[in-house]
Length: 289
Image: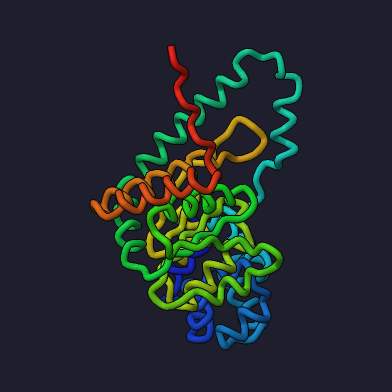
């Protein structure tokens, strides 16, 4: 049984002071994992001693152990290291099945992602369509997910913006968030600090959030209005983002299909501009016979 479920089941047996803590940690699981005990105490209007007593009442040695249990609930527990996974690859360079394993796992990832996110894609589209502006964020390995979404979606919609923190500008970019806007944010375990920061800033600004992530208990999903799940399995040492990119491609495909005939003219104009500006090489003329 996870820590949060344990708290729910034992809530009625807690004293009023401990129930006050329980309400806060259940409503703000991200804060339990990312903030200090002092900050959690201040925000829950409880003393550090009360937080320790709360943890011990649930059977934990202290607050750090309860914090670890919350992290495990959210998929943030210790996992096999990249180096540990890499050891399994060493010496397999001549193994004829090595690359075949990768493509087989990717096929399974795509199938699982399709099943997990098919229904949520339509809901995410409806949320994004209504937003005056759309922001997208993904950091480190998830940057390609956010960038590909922005690059393709912006071909037919101008009010789409990449939040990348380039040059230390993350706070400045977050100031553009406005009530009613949408944020598409991607991350997988171990989750990116910047992705969570951006999601929290968007929530505070009144944005609607679409999380592209690997679990419904991820910190992003817990803040999101809609969650698009993707599978990150890989036989290599690093998790795969291929299915995450596939989700954004499906999302943009649906957005274009729902936008109607006006989208055709905008896409034609954007493509023509890419050729005229020299960004795309002009296709070579066919040679005569």
